[in-house]
Length: 237
Image (tube, rainbow, N blue to C red; front, side):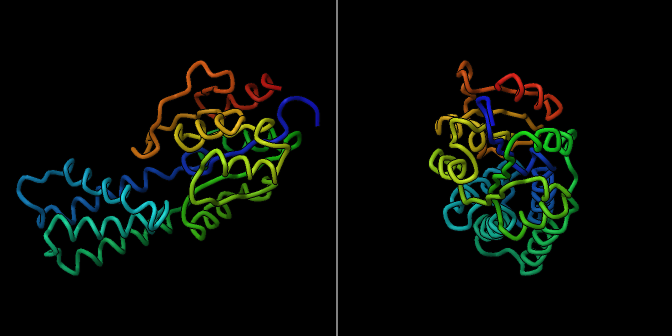
């Protein structure tokens, strides 16, 4: 291959297919189930803040994904009710988590075209976080699996992780680009690894994934949707 780029990495959740909206729906269900069991001064916003605290606290234990989120809901329910949450509520929280593992996959606009249009010229790698079985399920249902030259399901996205991935699947991070909706996970660490980071904003972003955009960095770009990706990649080289 000639040119600057030889390898393109794609994030999965909320870059190629919908994901965060299912967490939001389940969080609303969480608030409904606990509304009769929490202190009078705890509204939905305060409850959401407690859940977020638990999620952050548990990332090192459970990692990213539905299972960790479900366990964090249960833990929060026990905490905010002073261990008085009824067993049937815990059961309903487990059911809500199980439902998240069965939602059908819906591709985001231009996702298939974006991958297809680049697959004949570049190595294409999927780099995603989350539960192994759930991410494999979503990839299989997406219909995009055969287009990727490699699939990496990792516990965290760091500069070292990107360096390793693109050393194994390409010609190093310096000749690779990472495309995703998370500034914290997809863009910033990839640029720190020496590659390009392309930010594709999504309407719903988990608070943990927020980070300052590296505005002005020569290897940072932002597009409105994946329909603009091929033109941008071509301009990079």
